[in-house]
Image 1 (tube, rainbow, N blue to C red):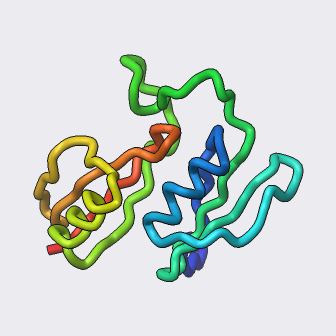
Image 2 (image 1 turned 30 degrees about the vertical axis):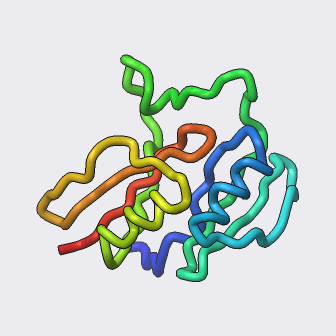
Length: 130
């Protein structure tokens, strides 16, 4: 077995660094660096340790999420799930920040999940465990 200690970061392709920074900073992420590297990327991190690399080479003319918003189901990562302690508090905080849920919360064997979309329609799940 390969010993994996944690997820180091999640890469999200975006079209507008300024708009994405504003959105993710509302969620508590802090800008660390970028654009850097050959792609290039910018790096943000939440105080919880969740690290996101923004991949800054998206085609700006296309705003739909091909993995989530087309009839044909393509392979690939569809979303990131962030664990929160309090469903109601988190939903109220999102509302106060002007961030709408994309659908209603639903309960499952692991707890309650609800979703939002970033400025490029990338999906973010929040999950409040039971």
